[in-house]
Structure formats: structure tokens, C-alpha cells
Image: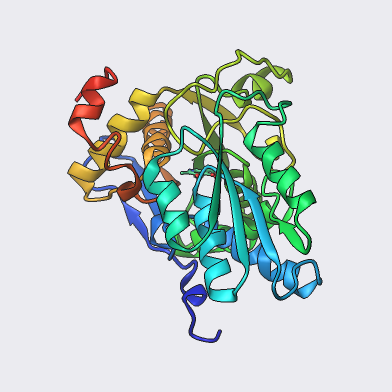
Length: 324
Ligand SMILES: Cc1ncc(COP(=O)(O)O)c(C=O)c1O
């Protein structure tokens, strides 16, 4: 602790839904991860991984941090680079909102945009672009959030214990969608160690490979990942995602995510991103199936301000054929 911005990471509030949960025997609590200083849950993993790299000599003064990111890990890395004096180079798919790209530049990071349509094995894919840049840049460190076991470990060590303590051990179900899977894998592991009966429920967008992989063990590419929700679902299997920690999954569409995010803002006063909408939608679906009293916890991974030009904008919703 030295009083810097980094000391404000974590210990986020847990808030109980008051109006949009019609299931009287089920409590739904949402962890406001957008209250982390760069605006998302990714502050936790980036702080943990960068400080670990410093301790182990993998990142040295004057070094460069490189990462592939849908935006939030990038913002966290850019914030860390700003306060700690590292150069930061971030690659992202071109579907990421302009607000997110500009947020990275505001922290002084360099942004490299890659085509969303590039296949996972293409050199143009944003992950492969980051690997190439890291290989070409002397004294660089790639966070490697997809395959770095310290990603789920950071969630296991911080968010999991916070949820356990904030619910006084009453949590019965944990719900989250995933990209790297660090959130659902790390938090579920911690909660299940505390109480093996805690049920872990993962939401996945139609077009992502995770749901089919969980149900059948096969990776089926429909070639798309063409959903509009930003930051979850995946086109490749990675090591941060531990399906052994997941008890069941549900698929959602963009309409489920965006409509629920808007409802959360208008009815609960919580303005989160599309994945927060998806997580709460999935929590409500789960609640509708439960017959016993339950305490469901989910996360609102990032801040709605990043999406004001998208699903919080009525004209954008109409132009993209969503219900208002
Ligand atoms: C907005 C948003 N929600 C959820 C997630 C998923 O988190 P995780 O990578 O831990 O699965 C991400 C990850 O990039 C994200 O950006």
C-alpha cells in the first residue's frame, strides 16, 4: 500500500437487485466490478500478473507491456503502465467500441486494431498480432491472459473471498459469462472450496464455441463469433478456462444482454456493460428454475459509459433491430 490508484482495486460493493427479480425465494446480488479504477474486473488480474512479473524479473524498468484485449484488460494494463512507467502496446478486434479504444489512448497506450473476421489461426488475428509484437519488442512482457494460470488465480485470491465474506457464506449459486474464463473459473474454485454445494452457472453467447464444448467436448466453429456483445464468448479454447469448475451453462443472444443491461440501468440504477446484462439475464433464468431458497451472485464486469453510443442509444438499438 503506497496510496496510489492501484490501492483502490478490488473490495467492490455487492448490491442486491430490488425491482427486476420477481422470484421471492431467490436473492440476486451483483458485484459492481465497474467500480475498479479503470472501470472493470480486469484491474484485479492485471495488477496481480504485472506485480508478479516484476517480482520474478520478467518485467524490468523501462519495459513494454503487450496484450491482446477486447478493451478492459487493455485499460487495466494502460493504467498500470501509466503509474508504473512502462510502455504499453495493445491489440484488439475491430468490433470493440471506439470509447474503449480511446480510453486506452487516454492512458498513453499504443493501440493496434485487427480484423474481427480473422480466423484464430490467421497471423492477422488480434491474439497472434500481440504475440508477434511481443516477440519483436525487446524487454517486453505479454500478460497472456488467455493461457496464464495467474489470471484465474487472481480471481481466486481476491473476488472469490470478497463474495464469500460479503454474503457471510450464504452464496449458493455463482453466475458469469466468460472470455478467458478467469472470472468464472477462479471465483467458482474459491467458492466451491468453501462450500462444495455452490453451483456454478456459465452464460455463453450464441456463436461462441464454449457452450458446445461444455456439452459435447467438441469445438464446433460456425465461423462466426458474430454476436455484438463485447468481451465474452470465445473462438478458441484456452487454459484460463476450467470447465471442471462449471456445473451447467446457458446460451444467450445480444437482445437478452442489451435489454437486461438497459433494464438494470432504468430500474435498478446500475449502468453496466452488455456482459453485466447477460450475467443478470442468466441469473434470472436460473432463479426461474429454482424451487428452494437461494442466494445467487453474479458480476457486472464493466461500465456502461463505454457503450453509450451502442445499446444505451435508442437509435442504435432500432438500427440494429433490437426491441426497446
Ligand atoms: C466486458 C467483459 N465482461 C466479461 C469478461 C469476461 O471475463 P473473463 O475473461 O474473466 O472470462 C470480459 C473479458 O474480457 C469483459 O471484457
